[in-house]
Length: 348
Image 1 (cartoon, rainbow, N blue to C red):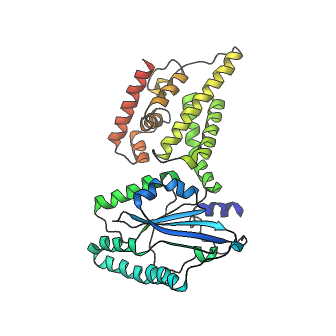
Image 2 (cartoon, rainbow, N blue to C red):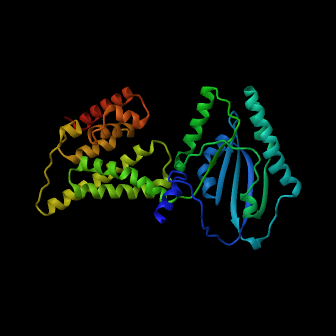
Image 3 (cartoon, rainbow, N blue to C red):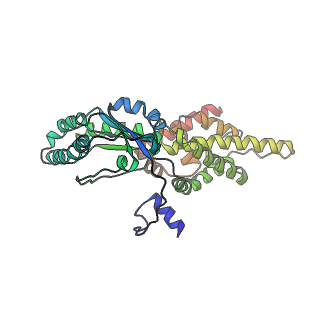
């Protein structure tokens, strides 16, 4: 069942266990690898460039330190020649340091948590820089004798910097002792992942656009335009706000465009649209829906989303608080500020 396999590609294990797979292979190629230590702040500041200039990029951050190990891999033709690591260097880095020593230091840190931070500082410096070219399977595949107990999350690339910074603050604030490095790996976009995104947000977006526009045709157009804008804009999404907040901001802009277009068409055909604002839906009396959309676009994103979820989608304070993972009092404050700003902007 192809559709079942497509779903499993997004969330392995959610639909059972895959027992048989047919792989489609590509011709063998070589990989030019550059592994080097970089300060964490430098890695985060240059993350976008590092991703764009390499075919494959990842880094490991050692908690309680300011250092990362970056791995930059670029595909090269196999016939361009190989320059692999020497047998001794490969054994030292990939076997002794990455398995024997690493396994021992993690075990020691579990027994004596106070040693985790100094051990990580030593570990961050132990793996030196190296550059080599070898077959892709030799670069990608490595033997691991240390048992990994870990979690893995898929997040938008633009949110990576904020996420790693947040993890660092959480480790420091809570006094956690984290012996295992945090790995950040960048993968190409997956159309199946966007299908999941579409299924999750298409309904709420449709209701939102219908709530602010009032005409089904306009709402459907604005919703589709928003989803297209999300698909095109995901690579540039920087995570400065929550994804949902960014998406509703796009929806507000598309709804405004759709409404202007519908007004122009209606005026051209002498069929003037009725301009009636619903106080139950908008919480303020606006002379036109366009006024309201323009005013929403001027609010801070978190205020615009809060008042839209409450007054357009009809969510309760508690539901909005759960959605944003903030106290209910914060939601009430945001909605109060948003309504006050809307009244000022609409001069009512």
